[in-house]
Length: 239
Image (cartoon, rainbow, N blue to C red; front, side, top):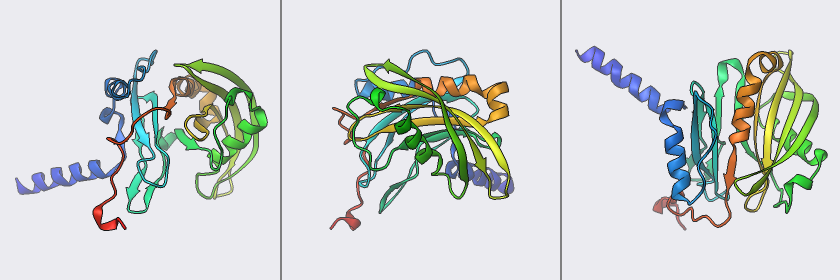
């Protein structure tokens, strides 16, 4: 009846307003979008994983990038928000209740690196500290890079970094976290995808997941025409 119909509509509305579950994405959709830009498909995606290929930088306040990576099917995706002032937020996937996340980050005020693989551990450390410090009022200490490994994938250079740190929560708890990241330099800056979880979960469950995610990470800018995907400014706000 009317009550059940109203409940169904309310439920549908809440789904539309919430972060999108992985079922809203998919490897085929991601690869179709990559193909539309003439880019190679995501390869070797693990069974039980979804994938995304999204534009970061649809607002005029950012330079556009095409970001792609895979993630477990039961993870939830959040995307940047758009308003008249431009774009805010980032591309992220996670199992938030467990503290497992993968987050895209553009290093502020960092120019293009001619060879990201020659930048060194101190550069990678500063980039990652900037990334993990974005998350609100939490404080971090004891950040350490465990290892850094250069790779070349689909014609671009990346550096895979293992790291760990201690999270000091607002409630005064210390939480050890471990993670992996992939750092690259596309367009006019430096970008990375970092994925982390509580150290105990990393050891017992998530290390393989997080490595699959960052190994799949691709970021593109040079030579791409983003005009069809960019957010057009409403005429009311044009000067």
